[in-house]
Length: 305
Image 1: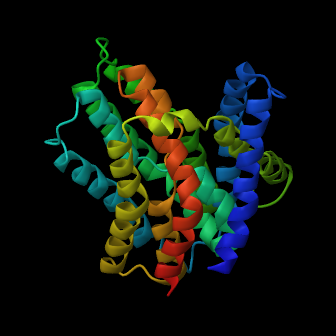
Image 2: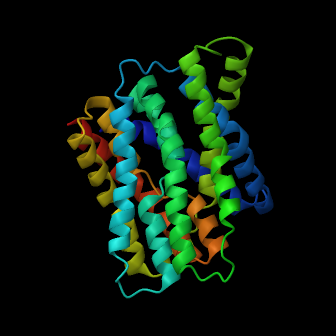
């Protein structure tokens, strides 16, 4: 587990710097949304395109790996739906659901290259394309039914947001370039690689800036359940499905790590917009980000043992 710990220390160190920058007001609070938007809309798509377009997938089990990832997220959605009879209000349930299914792929991308090498980073990048639409559709549907917002989402608008998601478009463009042998070298490849290198540090800083320790006191029992689903149940489900589908070695380790990543900050934004329990969601993101420092290495060790 030492290589994983060694790789996680700088990742969580940068997250900690982001929290300190916000807390100390060295970076003003109103600037962080711009950092998030820049990273999400431009820099991260450049990174995904760069990694996918130049990766060698010939010897990797990309098909079974992606199938296992999709089934893993769908299974976590089914498990969360099975918990609906719990005596909790609708908004709190939607946050429990989001906590079970949303993953912070940015932490995994930051970890992948140093722990899993170029092949692992290529698999981690590829998984965004099929899972981002699936997760968004599931979460929007649950929030539409059980969220407290009186304004229901415009289905056409939601669909367009998913179809035009820059992460999905970057993955598809990277896969096309890879298949056609385009942009393997040259100015476009170099530009994408250079822009992509700026993505993860900024995203990790923004994750740290978004941590809300006061939210850890919100509904502690429900928070404990959502953290358990995300950091213990999800990686076990992903590992089990991957094993059943014949995924092994490096691909199985990456797949299990996908399940073991902390909650995504985007879940807080969606909860705020659609009537979920935003405070519970903020507590979930904060708690899973902190606890994943210990649980992620454990699950990678299980998958590689």
